[in-house]
Length: 95
Image 1 (cartoon, rainbow, N blue to C red):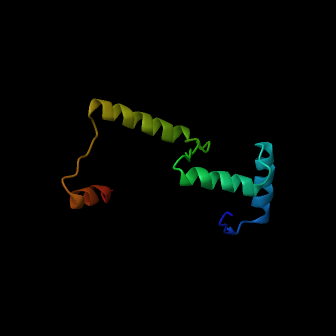
Image 2 (cartoon, one colour):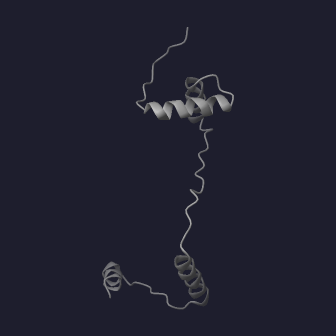
Image 3 (cartoon, rainbow, N blue to C red):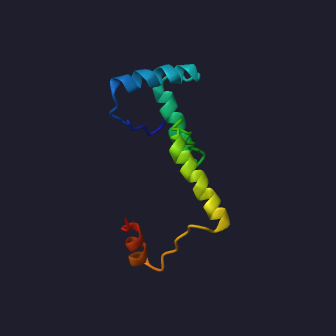
């Protein structure tokens, strides 16, 4: 006989409903099955978590700024190296 316990996780009703739809679409019989599979994989150190790009897009101005910074880094120009924390704070507080 297996020793069992119950895991209770408070979530919103809308999250549960959306998750149930996705679980079914993935072929799971229930959310409980999804949780059991995930916990089993986690316990075996077989769970891999991937964080995908959120689709956030930088403004044109920001993209140009970072492109210029890349060029500066490649050339070794416009780079500040702090000697210590106080030196860095002094530079950050300029202007």
